[in-house]
Length: 336
Image 1 (cartoon, rainbow, N blue to C red):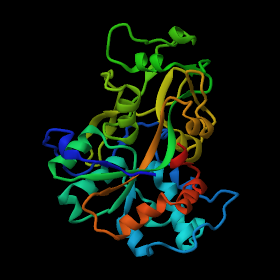
Image 2 (image 1 turned 30 degrees about the vertical axis):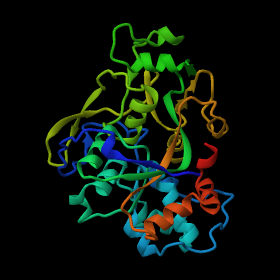
Image 3 (image 1 turned 60 degrees about the vertical axis):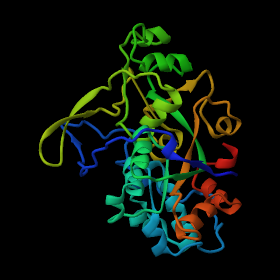
Image 4 (image 1 turned 90 degrees about the vertical axis):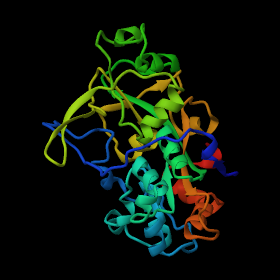
């Protein structure tokens, strides 16, 4: 498996990015948690029934792992499995460990790329989806090159309520639902459903899901403005934020297959087929599903040789490392 090295200096012009503090939001009068969010992720970190010991021993110490690893919410189970395989942690110990508190995709990229953050938080390896245009610009602004290596395959999926009679959409229909142009699809009756106005939810800018939507699905087509909701900020003020998903028969949203199928199962949500193809591991492996993607282990190109980050990255793409990826519930990268 070859590593993909992105030389960022030649990809984008420099951009001035504001990198202030982070505000954590709680929705005003929120009736129930975001069904694609991470509010219930910790309860899903138990080992599978077919769990077995794979690793002969740790490739890095636990203190080294704690100091280097970060990533997206959807890759937390990879870190959880490393904790079990390398250091023999119980499920309860894994659930309470600081290593599984991934900072989310965009924050992980910022901490890896921005020298201001690296003085305080310095992950050497992040497990994430591909970088957004803003993250690529941040890398160029700081003169950083990244090495991206796929470690697990996954599918980008579209979800709706189980009572929505529509079971499949085409790639073109998905794009017409979300694109900002005249003549788009705005009602479920246009795609064989009920006479209900489509509520097309999006994700926050620079989230892994939003980047995949823009790059993988829309392929550069301009998207319609997202649905907004009023949220309270941590400072007490009322702010507008992207309403990421509220499940209902008229709703449509998107996420990653692994996330919705393993980390947050919900009996009221169904996953739509695309072009009649069911999103599942078999179709990700064969390439039949049109929105097959990957999670990457990302390090800086200036990461020292034989550093813990490089050793762990190389281990994850080794045959034994890919067994661990599979034990965590993902498709092996070499098959995706």
